[in-house]
Length: 451
Image (cartoon, rainbow, N blue to C red; front, side, top):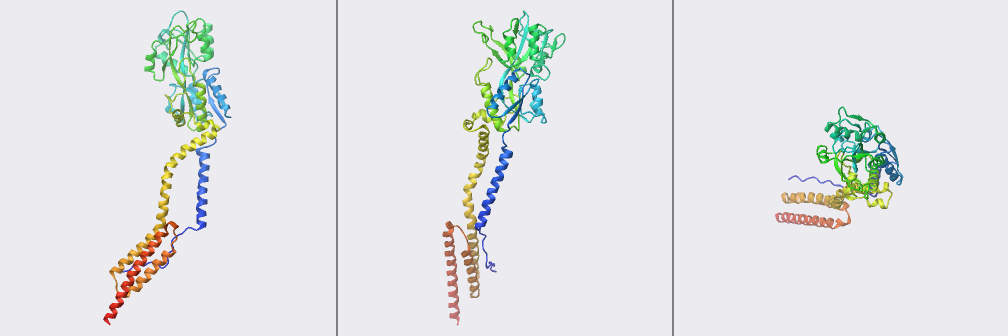
C-alpha cells in the first residue's frame, strides 16, 4: 500500500493581534454604514413642514384643518392648509405625485382607491351626514318627493355633490323639471334663507356653523329619511345615523322625533411614504380632535380603524391595536418615533441574531478542532499503513511520518479551552509510537533469530 505523503511543514492559519484589530475595525465600519443607511433612508428625520388639503373655507374640513394645525404646532411642525372644493379635489391632489401635499380629508365612497395605490388611511375620523334642508309647509321624508324643486347640490369636486347626484338619480328626481344648482354651502344657505332655492343638500358634520344655523332657522325643515336603511343596503359607503329627539333643545323637545340621516365616514388619508413620526402625530391629534361624543356618534367611536376606501397604514394599525406609544410621554415625538421604529427593526433582527450568537461558540471551537481532526486523519492513515505493511524496512519511514505529525501538533495554536484535547492527541501519537517501537523490536528479534 502506498503511503500518503504528509507535508513536512504545515502551519495552520492563525489570527494575529493585527488580524483581530482589522476584524474589529471592519465590524465597526459595517455598523456605522448600516446606521447611516438606517437613519437616512429607513428612518429619515421627520419633516418640519406638512401640507394638508382641507375643504371649502368655513366648512367642516377647514375647521378640522385649523385644529390639526394647532396640534402640530405644539410639536414644532408647521402645517400648511390648502383650501379645496372638497373630497374629490383632495383625492386628486393626493394621488398626483407632482402636487405638493401630504395629507387630506376624503369622504367615503367618493373615489376609487385603486386609482391611487400610493395612498393609505389613518382611519375614519367622523360621520358626515347628508343634510337635506327644505322650505315650505309640506313634510318630505323621501327624495322622490323633491321632483320639480330647485335643489342646491354643491360645487363640482365636492363629496356632497357626488352623493346628492347619485341619490337623486336613484329616486328619479335629477331630470327636468327639477333644477340642480351648483352652489357652495355658504351660498346655498343664503339662498334657501332668502327663498331663491327650495332644497339644499349639504354633507358636513353636526358642528358646522351653516348646519347649526339652518337647524335653528324658522321655516326651514330637515328631511327625515324613512328609507334610510334601504339606502345603506344599496350604497355600502352610506351609514344610517340618528339625530336624537330633543338634542337641539331638551326643554322644547326639538326635534320632536328621532331624525334618520344618511352619512358617510370621512377618512384621514396620507401618502404611503409619509414619515412614521408624522403619522403618529396625526393619529395622536385625531384622538384629541375626534374622540369626544357628538350628536350622531358616541365617545371613543372615532378615530376608527374602519376604512372603506383605502388600506389602513401599518402605523395606524399598530396605533389602534396597541394605543399611543408610552415613549411619546417621555420623549419628543421625533425621537419617540425613532425609538419605536428601531424596536420594530431590532426585534426581528434579534430573532435571527440570538440563535446565531448561540452557535458562534460551537463554530469557533469546531474551527479550531478541525486542526486536530486533520492530525487524527493523518494518524489513522499511518496506523492503517502499519497494519498493512509492517516490513522492517518501512519502520524508519513510519517514524519520520510520526515525527512530522507530532511536529505539526506542537505548532498548532488553539484556545486554552482546547489544550486538553491537544494533550489527548499527543497521547494517541504516543500510542502509535509505542506500537511502532514494538514492531521495530519484533523485527530486530526476528533478524537476530535468523542469524
